[in-house]
Length: 326
Image (cartoon, rainbow, N blue to C red; front, side, top):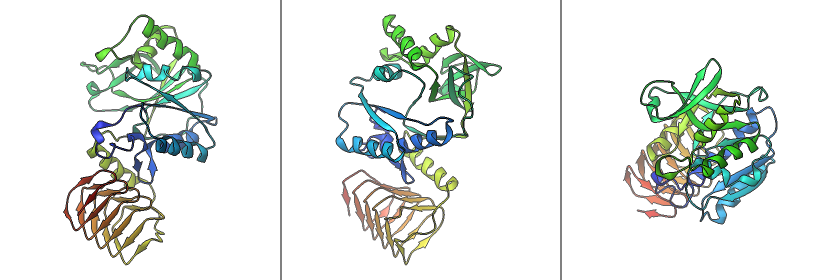
């Protein structure tokens, strides 16, 4: 999670993209929780690969996530962005035993994994209509035989989504080291995990795929809104809303337990995060982030950032964190 999420600005200008809240939970917590629920063995340690300049709040959030799930938190800094394989090898001291490598900028849903013991590597995939936009896994039967980045001719529609189980992380470490020793790199001089996995395939290791039920992009403002919309549709909403007074709710709507909504009309497709206040407003298809305030406004297709305030507006807008618009 070393990237800064530039396509999500202004929402990611202060808060790193993986720590943005998506219907009540930040992306990283959704990932951690999903694996604690679906893996056959407990998760004991979380190693977070961060970029330089992450402030103490980011560490506090990650510490809290791990504490809630009884996981030991560790932190590694990727000083330069040299690709996914480079990011992983920055955590070299932890590449031992079994583990999951996951990119922390998407939201996904998957079935429980009942057996991790018949594969050296499991890569989660999602069938897509246009595989030329993605890295794909090529299979013979139930075994992966190759990984191809953005194929121009159809060879597979199973897109790699950036989630991998590795039985022996030291073997991944060795494969990445070969990339550096032989300068096997791709576009922009970056080192890619898929190239390391190709080396492991050539060593005869067994690779299999597992399919996710949903793979939700959060990389752009439009995608973030669409992912929130999907989760509002598919996750149960708590209809006990103690902070909601004299208001009309048009489901699906998420309102955090400690948020306050007064004399307003919300929905459909609205997420109101922890500590937010909404008064005398009409809001639909929008996200109001933590501790934000919206008063006397009519908003549609809008985002109001953390600790920001909007008042007296009838518009579509996107306000970053710690801002004021009236």
